[in-house]
Amino acid sequence: MFKIQTKSLLIGVAALGLGLSAQAQTTTVDIVGATAFRSAAHTSIMASYTTLDGYAHSGAATKAGSASRVTYKGTFPGITGTTVIRVSWTGSVEGVRSLASSKATPDTFIPVSSVTTGETHSVTATVSGSKTAVMAFSDVAQANTPYKTPKLGGGPVGVIAFAPVINKGAEAEITNITGLQFRRLLSNGTIPESMLTGNTTSNGTIFLTGRNDGSGTRVAFLAEVGHGAANPVKQYVINATTSTTDLATPVLAPITANTTTYPGYVLSTDFAKKAVVGNGGYQSGGTIANWMKLPSSGDFNIVSWLGTSDAISAYSSGSGGRVLSYNGEKLEGVAAGSFTDADRNKIRLGKYSAWNFENLFTKGILKGNNKVVYDKLVATIPNNLGSSGVANDSSFKVTRTTDGSVIAPK
Image (cartoon, rainbow, N blue to C red; front, top):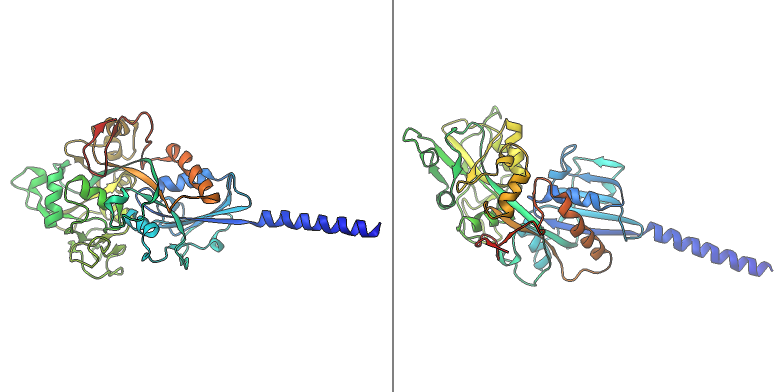
């Protein structure tokens, strides 16, 4: 009798141990890619959890949606135990590179040890030690990156829109910019202010600033205006004056990444494979948005191409930069600080052309818990796009075969 009881006790302990083991199981899923889509990705990831215990991010308090890196921890529907999702937003092209290139360096993530209850902010990231990303958000098609093989899985999960922006204090007559004017800026770096004002008395200079070529926003921009994503550009980097309240004269993007003098600036080497004078740019649209909030210190202004979330940030509730019309058409809501349904209809119906499909690419065919997370995100994203874009659903009446191509009815 004693032996039977002992055996029963051992079985019970073993069962309890298995239960504890299952409960203690941790699944980690790493996602990289588009900075322009990170606000929507952040909202969608949080909404996907059954219970979100906490998250840590690299930005200041309440800025997780615009942070470069975030790590989430909690219980996820369909997955046993704890699920950790780590994201690192380095750009769409860099995200594709992380999944497709054997030469990609490990992505940088915030360790789960930094996650406590609720929000933890301003956390320093750490290198993961291996190439662990299994998904990448991208504003552009894989075929429009240098990393075309192997073919990635996944596909469109929405539509992301962009807008031209000029910095605070620009002449009121500057209301519109065309694709051809942008092409001149991309090849020359500057244009006379009079090209945008139409006034012979305008003697200022317009400088172009923008992203590095690891960015999907840049690829989308170059494709949309017909410059060509693989072609080098002439862009300028920005600094504040000694008072930090206005912009110093822009400097042609250097061939060294001086992040002290030019915070957020990185070299462009994905397409050119080497640093080219003027071809560098900013790693984040948020950095450019912050420069747009300042007036210039002289007779010049800066223009750029931003995702709608960053364009709204640059507008800064009317105290910052100004969203312009593109080829005569403006996203009026974005220009006033809110992505409205009227804006979305201009995109859905083909009246406004500055948009791309937002993709969630996968490294091969996902299985197990990685597939569970992917499927949940795909289902959650359409209702959590916020100011980043438009759902690619039955209300979206147009299509295009690739980035910057002709828009046609479905």
